[in-house]
Each structure stands twice: as C-alpha cells, then as structure tokens.
Amino acid sequence: MVGNLNHIIDQVVKDKGIDRDVLVDALESAVLSAANKKFRNTRDLEAHFNEEIGEVEVFEFVTVVDEVVDSYKEIDLEEAREVDPDVEIDDSLGMMLEAGSFSRIAAQTAKQVIIQKVREAEREGVYNEFKDRVGEIVNGIVRRYERGDLIVDLGRAEALLPNREQAPRENYRQSDRVRAYISEVKMSAKGPQIILSRTHPGLLISLFKSEVPEVAEGIVEIIGAVREPGSRAKISVTSHDIDVDPVGACVGMRGSRVQNVVTELRGERIDIIPWTPDPARFACSALAPADVSRVYIDDEEQAMEIIVPDDQLSLAIGKKGQNVRLAAKLIGWKIDIKSESRAQEEEQDESPSAEAEDVTAAEVTSLDDTGQSEVEVAEEGAGDVTDEVNPDKAEN
Image 1 (cartoon, rainbow, N blue to C red):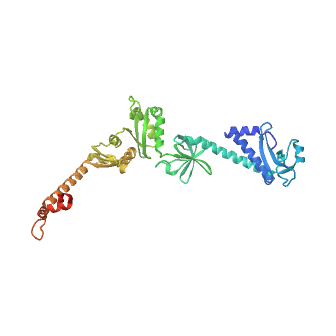
Image 2 (tube, rainbow, N blue to C red):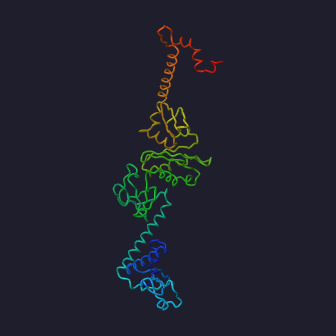
Image 3 (cartoon, helix red, strand yellow):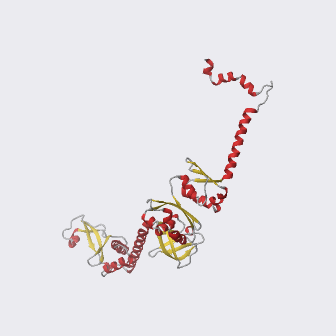
C-alpha cells in the first residue's frame, strides 16, 4: 500500500468512467478486508483514504479502561496516555497501523475486492445509461449467436436480441449491422441486461420519428401502431395543424419516407390510416383498401358488424384474416365482417320464421273430448281466468 494512489485512481476514473468516490470507497473496503483477514477479525478496524499522501490508512480502535480484559479491544489508561495525554477512561482511542505489515495473501484479497468493486461500478454505470433509453432505436454489431439469440455489441455494453423478438425471414451473420428497439433494461445477477426487439410496434413508431420531421416535432402524432412482423403493419395518424396532411407527411414525396421505413423492416407492408374519434369511420379507414357498405355498432360489447360488397370480402379479410385482424387491434374493437349476400340471407331466414310462429299461434287449434276447440274453451272461461289472476277485481 506504499506509494501515491491518486494517479492510479485518476487513471481508472478516466478509463472506466467510474465516479471517484466509488473507487475510493472500493479501495477503503479492500484494504479493510485485507486488514481484517490479517488480524482474523479480532480487532476493531477502520480504513480511510488520505488524499494528501495518496494512501489508505488503517486505524485500530480500542477502549480505554482501568483493567484490560480483552487486549485486542481494550487498553489501560497509562499506556493510552503515552499516545494521547488527554485521554480518559471509556474513551475510544484510534491508532494507525503499519500497512506494510499486511501479508501477501491479504494484499491479493485487497486486489480482488478492488476488481470486483470496479466491475460492479461499471455494471451500474451501464445500467444507469441505458435504463432511461427504453423506447429508443440503437445501432449495433452482431457478435455471435447463442441458442438462436443474437448478442449485439452496442459499444459500452452487449445487448440481447432474443429469437422471439426477431422478425421472420431476417437472418444475420457475424459483424452485420443491426438496428433494433430497446424494449427492456433490467439488472440481473450477471449485470445489466439490455433486451432488444425487431418485432415491437415501438420500432415502427421510432422509425417514422426518425424519417418524418413532422412526427419528431409533434405536428403529426402517431396514435397507434400494430404489426405482424415481416408481413404487414398499420399505423393511425392525426395532425395538430390543419394545414398538414398526416398521411401525406408520413408517405413523403413519391413515397420516399415510408419506403425508407419499409426497407429497414425488410419489405414489411405498411398501411397509414387517418385517425378519427368516430369508431365507425375509423373502422372503415382501417379496413382499407376494401370498401364498406354498412357498419352496425354495439357500444356495450365494443363490437362491430361490418357489411362489405361481395367482391370486397376477401380484400377486407385479407390473407389468412390478416387485414381484419390488424384493423381490430388498431381500433380496439371486435370486428365481424359479412358480405352483402350473406347479410341478406340471414335477414330473409329470420323473417319467414317469425311469420310462421304468428300463423301457428293464430290458426292451429286442436279438439278436446267434447269437440270444442281450445280457443272456444278459453273464450267461455275468460271470466274465471280473470278472477283468478285479479282477485281484487273479482270481489268488486
């Protein structure tokens, strides 16, 4: 522990970006650990870094007593006054120990503690840097695959792009560059863990923010975004300036802005839909490019029945139900799509059945043993039935 440590501390602080106080605390803890190991934890010790001489000094504290019982933690008054003439009984006296008396094993322990503290400080620094960056897009370099997951080098830290967060048909090789969305940052036993995503809807929103100045400035707002990664996506947009067309701003001149986003997402098709507070109109827009004939809304169930022309049904539903599924996610309502012909068939099926029930009730009768119809019997006993149902009226 001999020598000025200030230069070493300054160099580590500069290279590792660690706070100086954290490193000084690590040094003090390391030296104290080494001292306790040397004296087998039999003494009351404290370690303090002396800025002036650049050394960590270790002090042994003992209690001044008349009669010594524990020589490791007590000292008699006469001996104590040789160190400090003003000391009194029950005072705590601190005496500096020779740091050079620590063994080689103790020094090695101190070195390990310092390394551990530096590593913990680095991890804490990385965590503090990235925890507030959730929702951002970062650029990284693919380092390796681990069981289908990608390890991405972000510079100061490595991030994980799990297999489940990788878009279908996207393949990467070592040293490839990748842009991804920071979906989560958490501290684990092995240090900070940065989770990336290529499938999160936030990636789509962030890409439009970087490509469309009106979105970045807040003039155009992206209300919602839904994706089926690698295949198709829908976003709803609105403008806070009546002179700015939100869809046109996102599309760009000759589609240049949206095309840049599509290229980054490896050809994923993107539908840009104008948002409106009217759920029926919004649903019609969300189902584009299909045309809609009628919309029936159930506000309580948050459900819609949408009627489309027969030739538009497959277009409205989309491949494997993709279009209507994304539209339902975007507006947050349940959607049931029917063609015009099917809707008419259902209406016709309901009408004849209702008429048949009325005819049966009015015309079909049966004969009892006396040959009277049930309808006639009911008419003759009408007064008795009334009295039975309304006893108060019968008394009157």
